[in-house]
Image 1: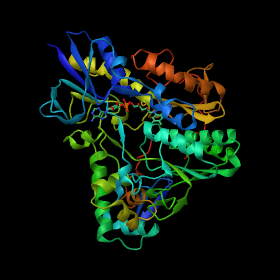
Image 2 (image 1 turned 90 degrees about the vertical axis):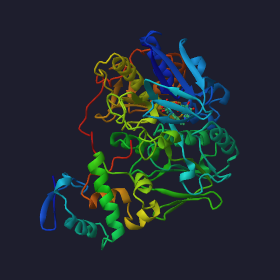
Image 3 (image 1 turned 120 degrees about the horizontal axis):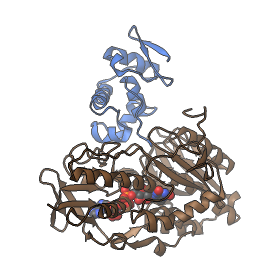
Image 4 (image 1 turned 90 degrees about the horizontal axis):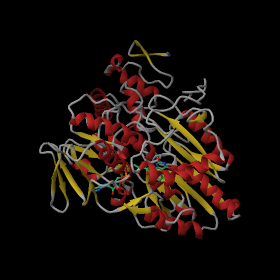
Length: 105
Length: 415
Ligand SMILES: Cc1cc2nc3c(=O)[nH]c(=O)nc-3n(C[C@H](O)[C@H](O)[C@H](O)COP(=O)(O)OP(=O)(O)OC[C@H]3O[C@@H](n4cnc5c(N)ncnc54)[C@H](O)[C@@H]3O)c2cc1C
């Protein structure tokens, strides 16, 4: 498994850069992961989504898809794309240290 | 005491489950009622063929109640809500039906209104996911003399996730046959990062698309559909132009599922245990088919395998026994590729579609185009009405995914 270092700590990530163990993540790591993904600063709106992702993951064992985010996080899909341009669910999951949302079967 | 089993939805899953239960339970054991809003059972796989003049609308629809065994009561009514506390189903006509066991089999609903512009009336934007749409599309294709056709699925989950690909293959065949294929561009536009969700399958299908000169646009998340301007616009502001768009709208569960407290998830699907199909909210509530939040394809074949499992589980539940039967995610589908050929894929929760033969060494070829698979797809219509819906246990097509005849390869899990 590849490793990555965020906030001075080495963590295990998968081939696509998603955390293998979400428990290894803490808030101090998020800005660095975000920068590596092309998001220079995390605003309050970013954090609202990230925290929502973490809570959903803890409760359901899976991160929400964009569509579910748009319906339940209080942030519209349009805004989500402005906050996390390349694909909100994937990107927010990566920055929040949870696995890539499955969402599609 | 006679248990009241109420099945919401008399489509593929509800019908075959009710019939199986009637076979397994005496009339003293249980009274079984199926509720559906109408008495017209549509063979949905036929919708794929209708736009190309390969199926007739009147032949795809039969009476729902006629598909139910004697001893299963049919009630024609619109379900308005479920009261989990009171164990009652509220009907739109004001009626109320109490239950001891409830089965949600109300399928998936189309939600074009969730995509900007998609529910606006338009001559250029079509769908084949409902009967009316498929008929309208048949007329539009017949008039089409050249230009760009875009086939787009807005987002997963959708029913029969291979159907939009099949549509593209059939469009290639259709325009070739009309001798105007050179004047038609066909582009398949998907929010996924490849042609299909399952990697092994995505490779095989991606290859076929190229071979058939069908362009592939991936990771396109349709934000709006502009029929007058003839373009799809993605949330990240990319555009795909078209002369005719065939769009598969977003799917949700039946609206009453979402509006009945505790019953559904954010998209209106019913959260159930992946293996027993029992609701995560209530032990006396179950769901099968497209209405359930299962991580497998929303397909008739999956509903069929689930029905076999669920009937056993409900019988055990009524007898206060532990639920014995476990669904493994088994699904199979024929993928029509045009020119009288089709591919067959077979998979479950754990196993990707593998090459080989189904259901054993001498069976139908898997993950490869063949004429036999095309005949299989056509035969499925007869099996559907006469084997699957009556709730018969079909020879060779069991609930558990067969391993015989499959080649486990190192290429598996490549993406
Ligand atoms: C174009 C297309 C092609 C397909 N091709 C294939 C294929 O090749 N192979 C395959 O296996 N599957 C295929 N499918 C999928 C298959 O048809 C479905 O997965 C299957 O029918 C699901 O069964 P179900 O019982 O869950 O839902 P459905 O069969 O859709 O039944 C749901 C029922 O609930 C009723 N209902 C909903 N809401 C209410 C309400 N509020 N009150 C009362 N009644 C209500 C509806 O009227 C309907 O009868 C295809 C689907 C489409 C659209």
